[in-house]
Length: 356
Ligand SMILES: [Zn+2]
Image (cartoon, rainbow, N blue to C red):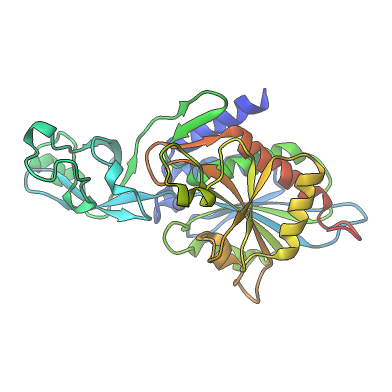
C-alpha cells in the first residue's frame, strides 16, 4: 500500500479512538497501539497507567547492548463530568487544557459505564444573547445536552465519566489532515511508520518504542515507563505550534510552518549531543527540518524524562500542528514522514561501534 495512504488510514483509526487522561488503560486506543506494536516488535509490554511499549532486540556480532527509547504520549485533552443538573444537562471540568472558547456547538462523546453516548455542547443563539454576546464562554458556563430527560440522564451519566470530542477525521488538500487528538496521535503514527521502515532489519541496539499515558496532566506515564525501561538515550516525539493565518507577528517565531518538516528542539534541558547528531543527519540526508528554540522546559515529556533515575540524555522532535487542544487540530503527513525518516537514520546508526 502507498505509504501516505497507510499513514492516513492509521491516523483515522487512532484519532477516532479516545484516550483521555486517566482512561488510557481501559481505552481502545491503547489496544490498537498494542496490536500495531505487536506486528513489528519482539516483545510488547504495558503498565497499569496505560502506557504500552514494544522492543526490538539488537542482534549480530556488533550488538552494543545499548537501549534507545523513542516515545510519544498517547493521551489526549478531554473533559470530565462534574454534575448532572436536575434538568438533565451535564456540567464538565477540563482535563489537560481543552480550549474552552472553541467548545460551543461541538459534538462530544460521553464515555459512560454502559456505553458511549453522543451529546452537543449548548450554544446560546445570538438572538437571545443580551450582554457580552461576542464574549467566548468559559467552561463553567457550558453544559452538554444529550437529549435525555432528567431521570434518564441521572441514571446514565455519573460524576467522573469522560467526555471527548467526537469530531470526524477530515483529509484536507496537499496531505494535510484535520482531527481531534492529533496531539499526539501524529507522533504515535510517526513511530509506527518508523517500525514499518526498519521492519526485519538487524539493529545494533535494543530499540524501545513507547506510547505513554499521562502527558497532558502530570507526565506520570513517561516517568513510570522509563523508570522500568532504563534507556541509555531517549528521543521524545510531540507536536508543536504550527503557523496559521491571523497569528500575531510577535508569536510567529514560536511556530513552525506545516510542510516544512520535523522541528528539532533546542533547549537547556535537551541533550546537545543527540540534538547535534539529529541536525547533522537531517542536513546530510535532505530531510526537511527546522530548529525550534525553547528557553523553558519545552512543555513536553522531555522535561520529566531527562530527570528519571540518574538522568537520561533526551532529545525532542516535534510535528507542527495548528489549533492545538481543539476539535480541529491540523497537521501535514509530510511532516510526520520527516520525523520517521530522520528516526530511521538515527536508529540505523545508534549502537554501531565508533558511531553515534
Ligand atoms: Zn497537548
